[in-house]
Length: 389
Image 1 (cartoon, helix red, strand yellow):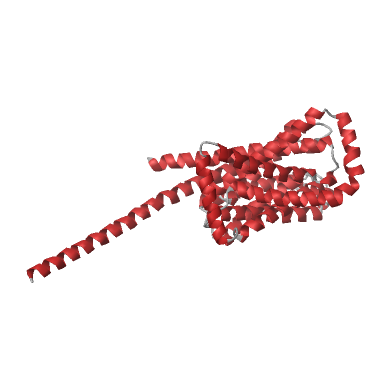
Image 2: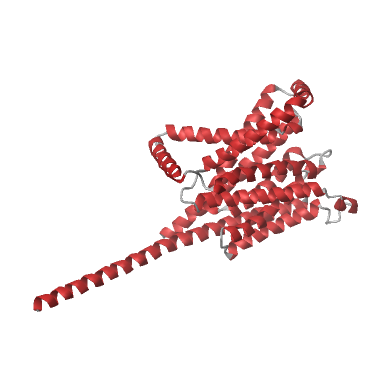
């Protein structure tokens, strides 16, 4: 009975964070699209990555501040001191911690470039390659074993993405052969390398969370990724954007402010930062509870959600590319059902492994007790023999 309750609780927790990650991810992408539509700044300013890194840094700092000021602040501070003491003894974080911000930076930079070249639908489809990559890297690098149910969920998601790919690439016969042969090679290459970087990011987060003696917290990892990216963005702004401030900043800003209300612009910028911060929190929770593969599947579900909500918000006669077709609806259903299947099977696998651990501990305890009892009996027999002598 206790095992059943634990399984139910674990499943509910995993599904909750996956749902929140997808919801905040959809909000993040839709508000980002709205920000780009405002054209407050030229796209060459790379304002979207800058907002991402700023949101990561601020959310990590705010969370740390709230934790230190809450009722459990004393416990949190003591735990932080213990971690810091251990790190001082070890002199540094694990080397994987320093690779993590680089993988995030490369993944995000190339992802934005791929979206610019390929467009939204094709990029969202190409982003699905993170799933088989993550499964492969987890098996090779983390020696992770997958159950049949988990692999079934992954397979269903890949089938859903393949259905969407057939539509995007025109394999369903609705597009001309010219379209199918005009695939932007540079955009596909950027998406491929971005997928590898994002897969490695998930693997590194899972390794740091579960495999190191002194694991960094989710906020520490978010802060590291944010500060590295923010420093790179600041350098880019100083040496590239500032020399072109007239064409990239001043003129677009003047034109945008004349066409849009300041309150609306501020609202969507703040909403985007908040959505990104909450999405990052959920991302860390998913990695800690279910691993990097679950994160990749959640990202796939989020991509489908973006396409669906984009259809509801932007589909029109003049914007047919934003519309969700019948093939896209089938793809969305497959991706969501596969993601939920994987989450469910992962929860069962975690519960089974968790329940087997106490059993092995009890067996070890019985073995030790039996050995102690036999030792006592032997000692008593030796004392009896001595007395008779």
